Amino acid sequence: MRIDIITVLPELLDSPFSHSIVKRAREKGVVEIHTHQLRNFTPFKHGQIDDYPFGGGAGMVMMVEPLVNCIESLQKERKYDEVIFLTPDGETFDQPMANRLSTLKNILLICGHYKGIDDRVREHFVTKEISIGDYVLSGGELAAAVVCDSIVRLIPGSIGDEMSALTDSFQDNLLAPPVYTRPAEFRGWKVPDILLSGHQKNIENWRHQQSLERTQNRRPDLL
Ligand code: 6GU
Image (cartoon, rainbow, N blue to C red; front, side, top):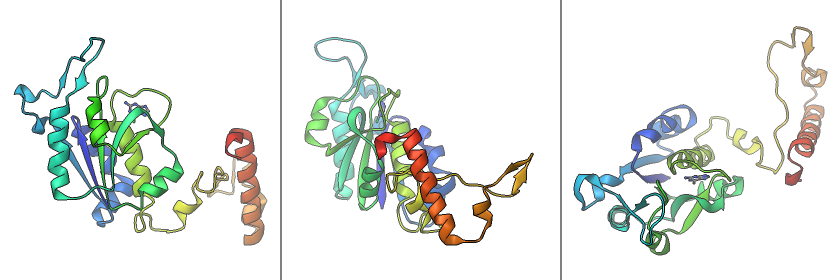
């Protein structure tokens, strides 16, 4: 998979893509992630990419021309399966959406700032709009990092143990069960006996029961 990201803050995205699973996936060639500085595509002086909104009002709007220049220059190189705009008024991101996006070959992410982007870009180029939740971020970059992380870990070859992404919370609409590691007792707090029993079938049943209880208690909306 290849992910291109248009942003005015490429540095903000360096760290999330340089550690852990995403780092290893890039090193293994499972995914390529490329950031593109929007200011390099403006025809205006001093790298200007935003302007005052027509009709007045607070905040600046990202201009149509730098965005279209950047998008079209990328589209000359390859066809994108989705052109995604990260925006708080988009469709709420969830695990099924991550699963579907992880099967695509080329995706383009556009990070907005200020009061948003000129709506003509959304109308003529954007194929999907994603929000990561009902709160406001200063820009789309952290949302892009969240979306990319959740997608990349699902691509076969990203995670050593192929099973482990499938047993994540949410992957079957249930929260994950509690987990423990050594020591079996700490300050008198014991790991549940069943996990030390060696009876794999009983352990699986117990974990499923714990998943159901956790989901019922914490996220009944998922059941
Ligand atoms: Cl995708 N962008 C911004 N700016 N804020 C958000 C968001 C996205 N998702 C939730 N809040």
